[in-house]
Length: 206
Length: 206
Image (cartoon, rainbow over all chains, first blue to last red; front, top):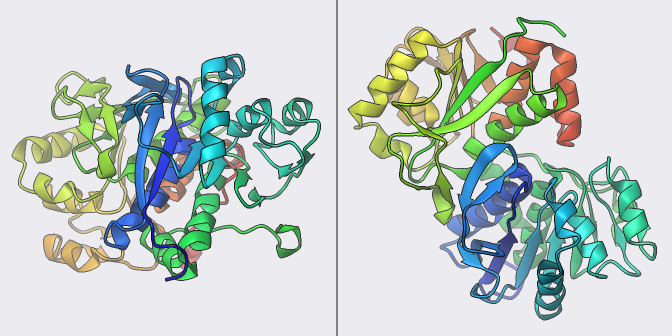
């Protein structure tokens, strides 16, 4: 197994009207990888602004593991998308927390329209990024200094990686497992999930 | 759009140590299909034995929409898998509820090791079925009168459909959307989720 062996804290931000698969896809990938490797890889938890139950899209009710003020220090921060991202674009508490957490973290990952929050927090300036196919135009408005790519499952800039819509969060997180802990760890995780990952065309990998 | 236009109640059983993607994949598929079609297709909700929060695998905490005693009458019953299925094999309240609900429902769908519960409830007798690749042997012990298929994303018997591991629940539910409401409804749902569904080889379709 490649990569530094330190177990990573993976914080997944949740909020009202978060898209279900946007946050549960990454939750599944990182926690299955951890399970398959003696719980040495990833400590996965959800984080919300407040301690109340979060109403995800279509009425799925989730109790967050931690609030943003009390969570273990994230090594990897996952920002999912969904209709709820639109009101978070005006939420300075969350935007400030994302910006500060990202600076101290090893990496930040967005799924779907989670990229809009990264854009608004200024994290995508000078980078390449993608988002859900219906939000590409909005993303380029929010991130005029970002090169927006379409028709690609995810775009890796090292410490900042954005994925396209919904299910592509799974592909991105399997890529991240491989990047940190080696291809075999990623392959075992996908095999356990009976999932065939989609990769970006090799010419567009950064 | 093909199929009877009645909006279906989709009940997803949840329990401690349910595998996250096993239940959230179907939740996402049916609720996205519903959203894209003016909320005319599927009313999706979770159901648990009791009203307490359910601790899904890897500490994700979910508040069920309903208990099994008070939920709207399911047209489609989804039984996900996960380590928690093993103790449910001895839970007569749940097994009886599954059996009775299945008799009155239009269809029952299992994901991953959810098939073990269908087997124990006698629902798979005389049918073809599949499950997670690590549970094929256990399934054939629990369902000696069932033909167990491997290397196939899902097996359709009309009103009883079982899927293989974890992510194949998404493929199965996209198939079910198409079966009830037509291929175009399924195609739009997968496109919104940016997901490319996996199909069984056509020779093994029943």
